[in-house]
Image 1 (cartoon, rainbow, N blue to C red):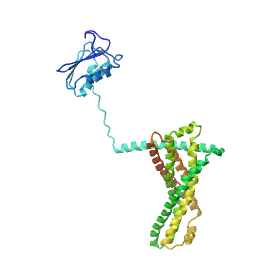
Image 2: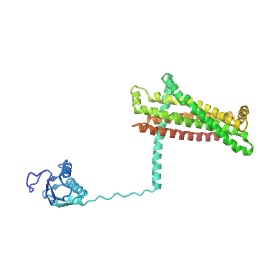
Image 3: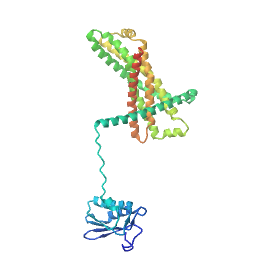
Image 4: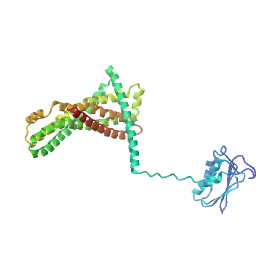
Length: 385
């Protein structure tokens, strides 16, 4: 940018020019470098210097006598000079102007940010606090989601035609009928393992027959309902999250809302109702298969006939033991269905979110099922049931 008049004249606009020689480069700066006039000057001068000036030659920067500047202009000129120095150029600055600001900005060095030394205790407390806040927010959202489901469910009770029974039966087939083989096999094997271990321990005291007592109480009261809930959480709860999450990614849930339908009624309630019906039936099936496994093993190891096994089981186990186990199934079903659908509706962005929410759904379902089982065991113990 070339000046139009001699340097002795005061100019209303900022200007700069460069003069290149073998010995070096001269950069002259003059005019009025004030706030209202330097809007595009920084980009212009940086672009000019970057393209035109050879990097090996020293630079002589001269601030002309008639150059006026305010704090914004002085800051800009100082930033340009510091930028040249940061590129390992040799830069000499001659200030003919009487600006009180430029020297200050040229010599100003920002103070280094203090380095915070955080020990592991502080970091652990920070992570604990952050995780506690996340847990609290998630719990409140889940509680609100549960309330929304209850309100929608109460409305459907007034008009059962709104409930999608076809969807309920289809999900019931997925949750219940197709889970029978895996539930039956796992329960049968666990019954055999429990029976084998208890026989080995009780044989020392000549009390192998009490294996049936141990097996009946543990299978009917705790093991069957817990194993069934964990398997269904991993199998069906994750499927709920993946299905609803994929629909959210494909904007199918937005389309449902555009049609004037309630996603809770269309997607969530049929799944929760299906798992609420199927899980108690699966728990009963698991109990029978676990006892069958124990009966097979006792007949093979301690020579107890099936009739003797059933007779001893009737004397050892009361009917309340059976109902204690069965009473947990609806609670576990609501937890699995609620968490699975809640995490599915939280899917946003990409397919990675589907995988992340599916994993969280399984982990949280199993965790809540175990916590609920512990609480109910304490309550039943307090009630002496």
